[in-house]
Length: 212
Image (cartoon, rainbow, N blue to C red; front, side, top):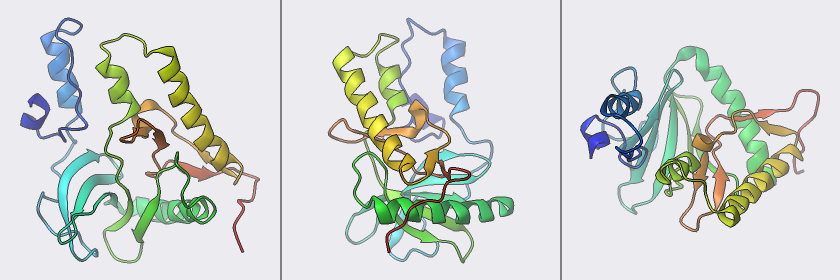
């Protein structure tokens, strides 16, 4: 509720234990979740260049633009869309889309890599749409323990999930350049998927594989 009152996505904020953090530290944490600028879009507005979809909730924002959870008006589908709102980032997101296409083509249903579903690279604002993974991030799981370590068997299961996704990408000549708990998503079954929101990059000197 505190996060919602400060304008953040309720599922991305984390309840902080008052026994472990002072009130100023808690306030500073929730302020840090706020975007540096007013969001470009608003809840309930239509998603540009995606007929039948509307903005549901802001997930994150940064220098690149914004990430929103969006919903399909008629059928109720849910996705995550990353919008590129800076002109200097357009070429980067286009190159990223090409790299993600290699992953999608070779690993269309890998359980540990978030799947790209659609892309708009011609009309502004450019965006990439991904499957929605609604279980939160590994970072939120770690913080929810109040500082206590995860049970060994649970930690090993999560670690193995991460390794399977990383190895599969490496075999295609692709590396995840920002692997951290905040970019690891947990699904309803407790399985980890690596977020593909502009973190994958081709390995220099190695040609990515592609199906004929």
